[in-house]
Length: 113
Image (cartoon, rainbow, N blue to C red; front, side, top):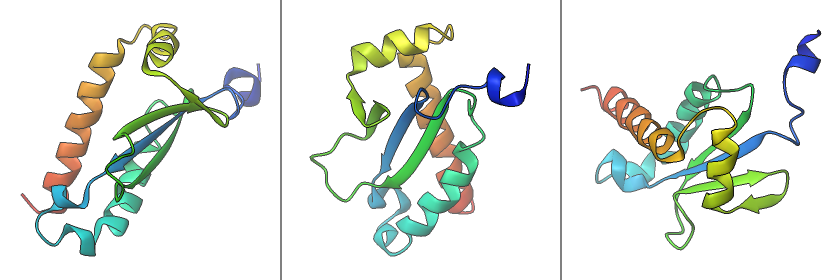
């Protein structure tokens, strides 16, 4: 089996849009949230890349969800995302917990703590 056959087509992969609020980086977070997101994108892209595409972006609009799931161009409701994760024996709530911990670790590292 070739590498292309063993991994999902990008249109079949789950896209996770993770919006990070500038304030999580401190009072001046808005000044460097773009750089932080770019750096975080490089860290996240390595995680579960066989079935997930990552988009780590600033959360300037609080009306948008912090975490959004998509397949192709279609939004995936949380209940459907949960079914998708179960195919990989992953509970969505646990995944989101680990995702938030990874972000916290990256923030701590970025802030030099």
